[in-house]
Length: 413
Image 1 (spheres, rainbow, N blue to C red):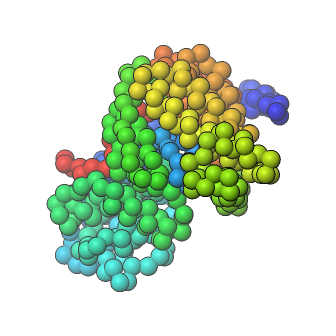
Image 2: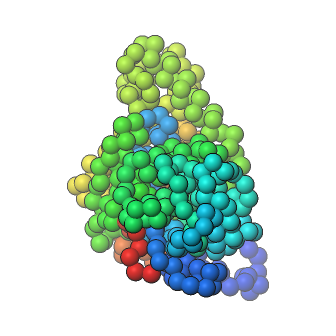
């Protein structure tokens, strides 16, 4: 293991160091921001609004495309869309500049036959969802604001898609039901208009999230179970490494191919295995001699991770946070060593968290090669946790969260 040099140790003269930036991200109110933006752009108040959350996956990484299990929870951070019908067939949408494009106003026809990908890029998520609906959405004016951090692997895109779907439902029917169809529409929008071949987890948890609960989702059947995580003494801490490695684009297809290859080898001996979620560690071990070592390690991660996911659900049901934490650490080690999708920055953040008394567990979360770590901790160690990250990884952006509510209509604007 590489020797880690704390970043603070590389700074020479402390007198010349600028004052430390605050590593904690403030939780601005996206509803107030969206309403103010709408009034400024369109000169009147919005009449309807929708919100949908980002998410963090507590455990169950790189299992979704193997028909496996995932264990996400919705954040208390949301994308918000407010607006009103405008009597035309054109959508005019303004966004706060946080969505990362220079163009903050998009106008396009809502006619399903003419919806096409284009600039600004963020508008493709909106168009993609409208294209999935079975009915024509009338023209509307809208404003979007979000306090889901962009680009950290916290599903800001899924929260936007699910928010748009919820808003469109309200435009058409005056209400919105949270259904599987909604989540699947949003996933298809991301596949077709944003060209991201994502699994179903992000749209599912953004749709069905429940305050005080995480979700155990079976990515094959799409059955799910809501698991209470409502102990006031327990907090979830998210630390964004603020690094993204370009590796992810080239490495994901390799991981997926290795998993498919492993299934082929296991299937020859155990024909009932259709995906890695069906295989046991015993079966994998029995096939070890006919599998190359790299494929074996990739498969060992996925099979172990599916077991850890179900173990975490059982431990959370019992309130056994120490066991949950152990499983999170095992997950991190497996992602780092067997699946090889971590990076030095994520490993460092994970080690910093684990050095703090009162932390149950910590792991990288999301696809890897950068992004965030997620830490489960007792609330009494919040200050120590922040201080440790501030000292040894001052370029992080962090926040505490509890499980938030899924997609919903906003009643008071």
